[in-house]
Image (cartoon, rainbow, N blue to C red; front, top):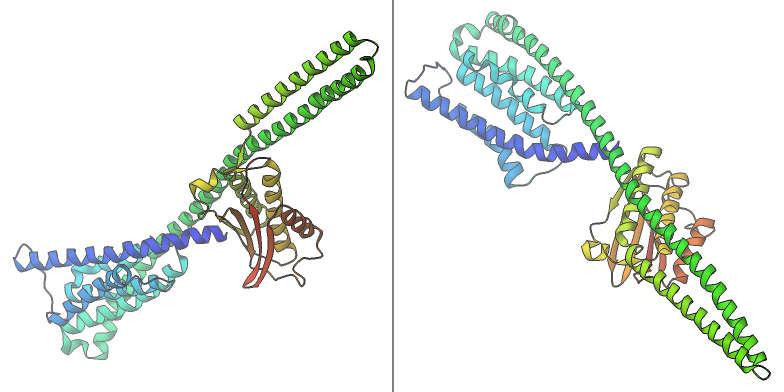
Length: 417
C-alpha cells in the first residue's frame, strides 16, 4: 500500500505543475474573451468594471505558476493552495461576467479530478459552495446596490439564485466523486497486477540463475567424482610401477604409461569443465540484484510491508562484475535474514535495501524503521553466521541505530573461485 501511496504522491507533484499551467491557459482564454468583447464581436454586460477586479483575477490565475514552476514549491499543502486560488478565480469570473460565466464555478472541481484525492475533493466542494454564495450576492449587489443592500435583497439572491445552483453543483460533485473513487480502485488494481507481473518476470530470471548455480554444482561434483577417481587410480598405478620396476621394468613402464594417459584425460576434463563454467555459468552483481528484488517484492505482497530497493549507485560497470555463486547465495540469504529480523523483532513497516560498489567493495545496507535490538543481534544465530562469513571473506559487518536500525555488509568484489 505504501508503494501505491508513493505512486500517487509522484502523480500529485506532476499534477501541481500541470494545474499551474492550466490556470495560465484559463487566463489566456479570459483575456481573449475580454478582447472579443471590446471589439464588439459579442456583447457581455458587467458591472464589475473597476480594473481592480481584473487585476485580482489575473493574480489568482498566475500565482500557481509562479509558486510551483518558478519558485519550485513542494509539499502536500501545495495542491490545496492551487485549488484555493482556482476557486477564488472562478468566483471573480462570475462577478465580472455574471450569468455567462456560471459554468466556470465547476472548473475547480474538474481540476481536482486530476489528483485522485478524495479529501481534496471535499475541501474543493466546501470552498466552491462558499464562493458561489459570496459571488452571487456580490454580483447582484453591483448590479442593483439599492435593492440588495436590504435584507430582502440578500434573501432573494441566496434563496432563489445561489442555493439552486449549489444543489445542481452538488449533483455534479457526487458524480465526480464516484468517478474519482472508481478510478482510484482501477489504479490500485493495475498497480497490483503490474507488481505481480514484475515479480513473475524476475522469478523467471532468477529461475535461470538457480539453474546456472545448479549446473555449477553438478560440474563441480562431476570433476570431483571423475577426475578424483582417475587421479587416485593413476597414483596407485605409479606406486605399483615403482614396486615392479626392479623385477619387471617393461610392466612398470606400461603402468607408468597408462597412468600418464589417465592424467592427460583428467587434465582435459578439467579444461573442458572450466571452459563450460567461463562460458555460461558466470554469476554477476546483476544476478544478485535480480534475486534480491524478487525477495523484496515477494515480501511486500506476503507481509504487507513496504520494501524499497535502491541500486542506483551500482552503475552499469558494477552490475557486470563477476560474483561467485556462494557469495550470491550468501548475500541473498543475509538480506532475507535482516528483513525477517526487522519485521519479527523490530516491528518494522518500512524497509530499504541499498547496494553500492566503492573501492573494490560491494556494500549492502538493510535499513528498517523498527526498534533496534538491545545487543545488535550479537547473540542471534542468523547474524552470527553472517558475521562469521563476512569476516572470513575479508569484509566487515556493522550496525547503526537511531533513525531506525541498519545492518551494513561490506564484501570484496572479486573474480570467480
